Image (cartoon, rainbow, N blue to C red; front, side):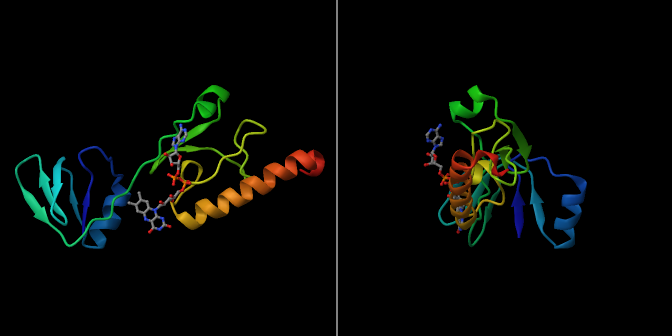
Length: 132
Ligand SMILES: Cc1cc2nc3c(=O)[nH]c(=O)nc-3n(C[C@H](O)[C@H](O)[C@H](O)COP(=O)(O)OP(=O)(O)OC[C@H]3O[C@@H](n4cnc5c(N)ncnc54)[C@H](O)[C@@H]3O)c2cc1C
C-alpha cells in the first residue's frame, strides 16, 4: 500500500510510525496526473502503477449561512468541519448541521442518519424549546 500526500498533506510523526509499522510506503512527491486505471505520474517524472486508488476528500464549508452567521468551523484531518453538539446544533442557536461537512468519518449512512437526527432535533427545539 502506498499513501500519496500530493506534497501538501502534513503527516504527524505518530501517523508515519503507524503507516511504517504496517509496511505502507509514503510518497510525498506531487502528483502530475492519473492515467489508465491507476497509473500515477509524479512531477519528478516517475510513474507508479496500481490496481486501484482510494481518494480521501476534504470538506470545505461553502455555505454563506455558515460564514455569515458565525458558526464555528474546526480544522479536522479531513478538512473544515462545522462544530455541532450532541443534538447536531451548531455554535449558533437554531442552526443545525449534519453530513460530511459536520462530522467524520465521511460515510453515506452517517450522513443520512445525521440528517434524520438534525431534522428531528430541530423540530423538537421548535415544538418543545424547554425540553433541553
Ligand atoms: C470517491 C468517493 C467514494 C465514496 N465512497 C463511499 C462509500 O463507498 N460508502 C460510503 O458510505 N460513503 C462513501 N463516500 C462518502 C459519501 O459520498 C459521503 O459521506 C456522503 O455523500 C455525504 O453526504 P452529504 O449529504 O453530507 O454531502 P454531499 O453528498 O457531498 O452533498 C452535499 C451537496 O451540497 C452541495 N453544496 C455544496 N456547497 C453548497 C452551497 N454553498 N450551496 C448549495 N449547495 C451546496 C454539493 O454540490 C452537494 O450536492 C465516498 C466519497 C467519495 C468522494
